[in-house]
Amino acid sequence: MNPDETCFMPAWQMADMVKRQEIPATEIVEAIIGRIEKINPKINAYVTTTFDLARNQAHAIDQLAKDGANTGLIGGVPTSIKDVIITGGIRTTNGGRLWENWIPKKDEVVVQRLKAAGGVILGKTNTPEIGHQAVTDNLIFGRTNNPWNLERTSGGSSGGAAAACASGTSPLSLGSDGAGSIRIPASFCGVFGFKPTFGRVPRYPHEGMAFRYLDCYGPITRFVQDAALMLDAIKGSHPNDRDSIRDDGVSYFKAISQEDRLSRLKIGYLPNLGYVELIEPEIAEMVTIAAHKFEEIGWTIEEPQFKTKNPEKNYSDYFIASAAYDYQKKIGTSRHLISPNLVKMIDAGMSMNGVMLMDAIYRRTTLYEEFARLFKAYDLLISPAMPCTAFPHGPMFPRIIAGKQASPMGFIGFTYPISMTGLPAAAVPIGLSKEGLPVSMQIIGPLSDDLKVLQASRAFEQIAPWHDRKPPVA
Image 1 (tube, rainbow, N blue to C red):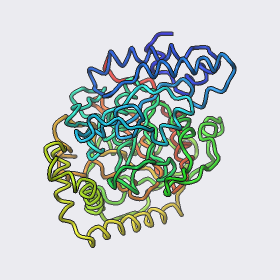
Image 2: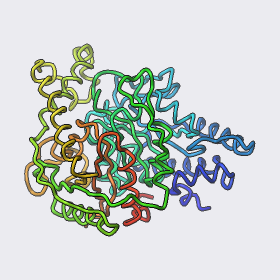
Image 3: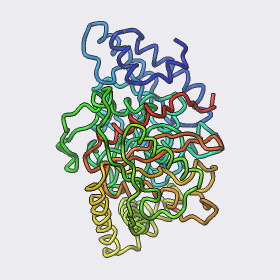
Image 4: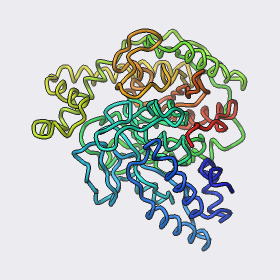
């Protein structure tokens, strides 16, 4: 098999072929490593590589397969880990100079589960410091380039994870999402990104307060089935994470791989999510057409009269207060080591009062209740994932969207409110803009109904496949 064909093969197929030894895990790993060495200097997705570890793990998986032993759900599949996720014996920088040389002693629970399922760890992917912004750039490693256009951002904060996946250098990418950090870069890079229900995947140990009660770990993949398989490997409660939820006992991979589609569903289409004012006309049109494609399989699409108050200030207040808490002892002596944009947020957070913070927390409750009422009438909700395509490197956010001035959080207006609610959501590729940049829609499900979001994403993948589109980086 051609090495590049191997690199873009579905992860579930890799695992299946390794199990049967139709292709050795070591061969897959060498193909991916060869592509990383070729592509990564151009996109800067990986910041720490663990090729020796990957080769050793692949060799061990092959031996299990030859012995007829269980190779695991993702046995032999090369996997990358976002650099805010703790990895024992592997440098974990959080994208910040304060952790530049930190080598933790133990893996986080999610990494332990990936390894136990047979995942082969390729290395760590780039992120802004503690994931604080939606473009991937930091003071240690610099920026990650978009594989579709190297002069554009890959998004963030899982920008390295999405760029690696899109470029064929990471069949399975583990990211995190507290404001859209999986869905934003997945949308900009043209891959599938899934944010599970809050607590579906445990977080332990969890350092600090930033993004606490918002952040979820989840998969970034090229194929929906791959995301379901990866989620099967990492979901389920853990006694040290009180927010984690019990495994529902369902194999998402098996459920979405069945030929029978979901019965007729009623979908609420929210072209502005109830409050977003700015969206590029081309994207609005593309998402509308994509949403109505579900009518081809008998589903009903309606536009509910849904309005909500812009939650930008509430989200911002919550994050900057928690960031200030985390950095309060460091900001005085280590200000020069902290990302400048984050310094501004920390300074603002230091002046917040308790009433402002409680208002932000209360808004999370009321926003969830508003969406919960929608789900009494609809099985799923659809919106754009992003109001614009990937923008040029430099600014932290696009100043102009649809010809009008945008706020700092204006370009993530479709994603962070869903993080506030804890609902499951996916960024699903729907095509390329006239500029040749990826566009995605967002599918949102009721609380704990992760499976239905994956099933709908898989249904769309079958109606309008996107896998034949590969970025021009080579």
